[in-house]
Structures are given as structure tokens and as C-alpha cells.
Length: 352
Picture 1: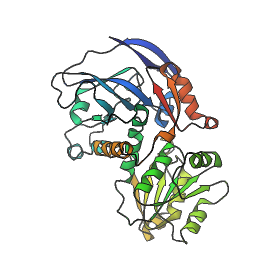
Picture 2: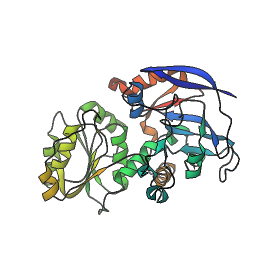
Picture 3: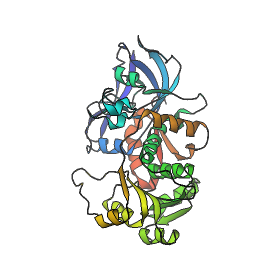
Picture 4: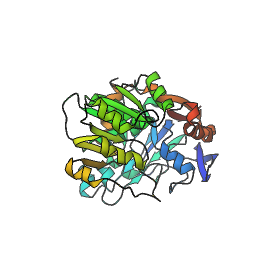
């Protein structure tokens, strides 16, 4: 059987090729890809800023089970599914606890070390199937919306280390891209009053137009973010601060706007060739701040994301702004990158 696939052949270039669908081996599952969303990481891969080991990328995947290999149980042809990205070793203590994103032996991932979803079909490898990476979703959830399960699960993982807080606590989300918007949605699910900060007005205007449930929208071109957050919290600062922008300045400001005993997530990374940040360690020490990293997600967080989307508690449809066929994947990536397009989430449909 043949399929169309977007093959990454070099920096900033895909070729759409007809390739063979690999025959299924024992324990594998073949998924017909119905939607694969474009992620910020896909932009870095496209630009040659991040290395992958496979020619077919894409990891925010939803589809339908087309074929089931021998030895696979609990998965049937016709099942509507999303695919968990991370594949742990399955043997270390973290993997045995269901925390495969913290795999001690360094996890592998769909779209990075295994071929991904920018193709008409995806072979889910045996170790991924065994881990439970093929996750069923309710029939009423559209494929486009299901593709947002992956980034939403990462947001949920970012909140996992935080302490439980009483309803009405203040969360400040810095960065109004799709990740910051999903953090805003999840903060509201947790009962927070949300302050959304962005470096400029256009993304905040988009967020307001689509009905993002932030309580305050702060344009960092008009206000000093630290001073504004303190003003909105009677001088106390935010109980939770999410750094959803890849910025050293944002990480420094997060400490300054945080309340005593606050949780801070350095959710967005900084460039690997320049990763060092000057931070006021006394703020951490005297204010007893809790700074957390965030890396990918695990199966339990996918299940929570599926539940929030399927139940309607979080409406992700409003984030989907553009949809492209596989043949226009380069245009899709540039559309997401170009702020003037108003793109929030861009979807690739391999069957358009």
C-alpha cells in the first residue's frame, strides 16, 4: 500500500512523496492520520534549529485505527484515537509510575525518533502500543480538535508539581500563543483568577475576540508587567506564574511578580546555545518560591485533556484558525510563524 508523506529533505524544505506504508510487525498498529497540528517545535525543526532522526515529522496526531498487528489487545479497527508522543523505556522507576516523560533512560518520541503524522498513515511502534500511546477518544470529538490533546496534555503536565490552592488564587500567564491560551483555560478549570500578559497588543486582541477566559489582559508595551501584576493583586503578587514565552526577561520577571510561596513554571525553554539566565536568588530564598520545569507529558495527562475537551468544559475549537492539505505544509508552517495572519492553531489534513 502507498501513501503520501511530507518528507523533510533539508532545511526549510519538504517534498511530498508517495512512499510505501511499512507492513505491520507484531505488536504494531496502523493509524490513518486525519489531522496533525503544527507545533512551535515543528517550526524549529523546519528551520534546522532542532534535530530529528526521521524524515516524517509531526506529533500532534489524531486519526482512525486502520489495521492491528498480531498480539495487540484492546485496540480495534475503526477506533478513533490520538497518539501519545513520548515513548519511555518501560523499565525505569519513572516509566513504571506512568511518568514516561521523565524516563531515566531518555524517552524517544513520535515525530522525532519514530516517523510522525505529516503523512496519510502512521505506524505506531510496538513499544509505543505496549505503553498505551494509542488512546481512544469519543466519536463526537472532531479530529481537528482532538489534535490539540497533545499540547493541552503538556500544559496539564506543567501544572502537575503545583500545590493545591483554594479557588480564587491568582495565576499570571506570560505569553499569549496557543500554549499560553491553553494555560489560561486550565487555570480557570483550577479556579484561578487569570492575568494574561503578552509583549504586544495583537495577540491579546485575538485572545479577547475568541473569548479566552482571562480576567485581565496586560500589554507589556503599555504596562510594566511586574508592576501591573502587583497592582492587580493588592501588592501580593501572583500565586502561580507560567512562563509560556521563550524569554530570559520573562523568567526574571516571573520571580519578581510572584507572591510568597508561589509556584513558577519555566514552561518555555530558552535557546540551547545561550541557556544561562541571571536570576535574583534572594527572591527564591526569602519568598520560598517553587520553580518547576516542564517537559512533554504522559498518558494520564492525555486522558485528562481528552476528558476536558470531550466534555465541553474546555472549547478548543476556537483555537483552530487555519487548515491545509499535506501539499501545502510549507505554507502552513509559514502561516503559523507569520503573526500578521492571526494564526493560533494550524492543522494539516493529509486527505484534503
